[in-house]
Image (cartoon, rainbow, N blue to C red):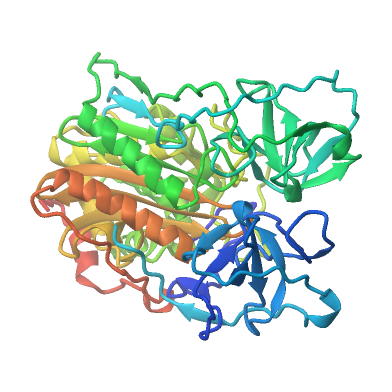
Length: 583
């Protein structure tokens, strides 16, 4: 949704456009496909010594036509014509389907006899998915990025140590974001992630697998492995050590434990809640959102009954998107001395439900006594007052990407401890999942535990009305799709091209809780990849709190048309103007 000054919006993108899924040809020969997540070379035959005939397009599912009898190489076809186009190394692609039943082949592909690869047809679809609190003193557990301990390797042979003095002057330049492995194959655990342009000294090559050994100080052995096709090789690798063992005897990697800390009250998180955190981390990892890579996510969960909280990725700041409007609403109510009038109540509804940026800027203007910029600064001051020091907004929302608002003077952008570089966060509007989670928990406690916010400036009636307007949010996707339709969820959605998120208070029979989740992929994040992960994580949390009536699968959910979203003259406006509200 909206983004503040300094970054482009999705203002012209209708909300009902949820996902675009690539569809391969209907008449697949084998039912097996291969997809590349990095640059993968296509070769004329089953080995790196064969000519390079092309590269797989990242994210496209290529039909697999055959396999080599003796080597882990697959023959792939054009996604549309199904004609063979070349061979790929099986262990550096994602394969869907069973390869054991593929026909065997040793064909050598002549690129001059193959037509150019055609782009697969694109069909718009609504994404579906497989089945599958408020004090800052709460208990917190930080979950490991992988969600589970690193597996132990079975040792059957001794890894040969390079015998030379590493004066080969032979290196590999990384071609994209890639995994660095403990051994020569994807079956070995990852010991690191390398970025495009990084240069590694090559110390050896495997005689049977297309992998090279590199010097890697972060590995327990001081060495690691990368697939040859992921590197631009400088020099002759065959001048380095030849390594032929199929299984390598490697030191056992020490599992990385979750880091658990206690709140100021000294209490520890329960083992059951900690296990839930590990499960949520694994859901994100399985969806391809890995804190060790540039495609990553973060989440915050608080049990509003016990104050226990789980946070993953709290060290990273994201573009605030429209989720920051929760803070704007809270700051507005701090300003008000009486219930809002009709126009202001309408702007509140259209801001929190329709994410209308013009209405949002009018709220900022009200906060700033006629100055939108001053209003944004006042929201940041409220964050600071609440101890939420890694989130801020210092500019109004952009209405026209080609004509952004210009400040009258230099912006006072707060210093924070969160990393905003990794997510390419909007410099004027940022949040962390734990800051937003604690803000929502504060609103909940104000509303139902009679704990006024900000020294009584926001009274319980106002907090209940804030949650009431968010409970009327008509967006039924994201975290909302992970709970039954009848469950009350007070939430705010937000998305821009590279970041999708949701922040919500859930009111369930088994207990109330706050959940905030943000997902990021550089440049563009597909909805058909983000929405199922958000919903599945939400379903897992709902089932934890409601084990007697669990959800078997996430709901499909929907996002309504933004063009029809306007709450002027509706009963909600009357609700927001009540001097007493007990919802």
